[in-house]
Length: 81
Image (cartoon, one colour):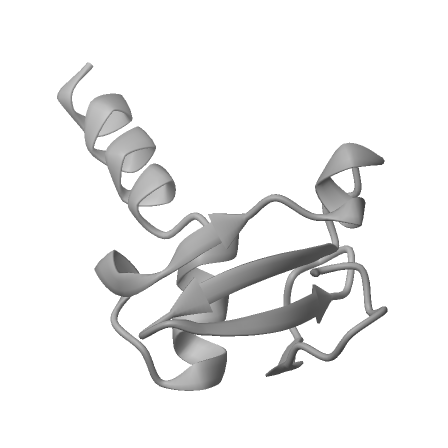
């Protein structure tokens, strides 16, 4: 039972959340990243989102496996504004 608990905790600790992926992509601490409301979240998309860190807004996207992430500064009309 302890082994199962340990494995479960280890797996959950490594989850690729949007906050963690964003932090890694833009060089920001995970605790400083906030996922912002966006056209992507309203549509229920899980591979694109908007996030803020240090008062800057970013548009982020990843593949289905969450093995690649790209975040760029948000611009008007990109779904984040």
